[in-house]
View 1 (tube, one colour):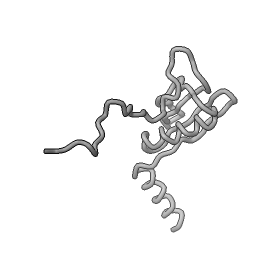
View 2 (cartoon, rainbow, N blue to C red; view 1 turned 90 degrees about the horizontal axis):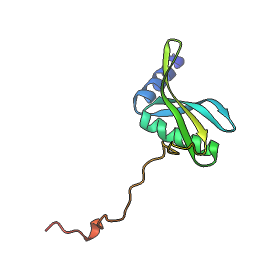
View 3 (spheres, rainbow, N blue to C red; view 1 turned 135 degrees about the vertical axis):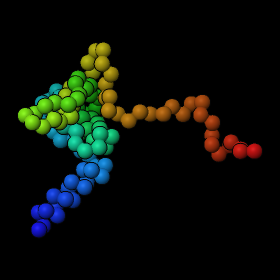
View 4 (cartoon, rainbow, N blue to C red; view 1 turned 90 degrees about the vertical axis):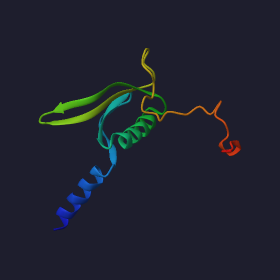
Amino acid sequence: MRPKLLSLAAALGIAGGCGGARVISRTPTGGVLVLEGSHSWARDIAHRRMVDHCRGPYTIVRDGDDAIGAVTEFRVHYVCGAVPGLPTSQYEPPTIPLEGIPNANSISID
């Protein structure tokens, strides 16, 4: 009975928006991750794993679905550092520039 309960809890966790980034392979210069569950959550975890592994910027050289036998996985292939012509750290959350945005506390609705 307990194994069924654990399987159900795991399935609900993945369906409920959780996600992760599992390491498939890693070398001193890059690696491959599998994104599981919610892509937005998994991309955030993948970004942190790649930054930690590369100790800074990384470049995704390929990402997308890979067929592994009868199963399809979303895999991310990355290298540490920059690759000419490709943007680095593509999974990094975008930053919003604050220049030119008015202070909300000083705006009146009148």
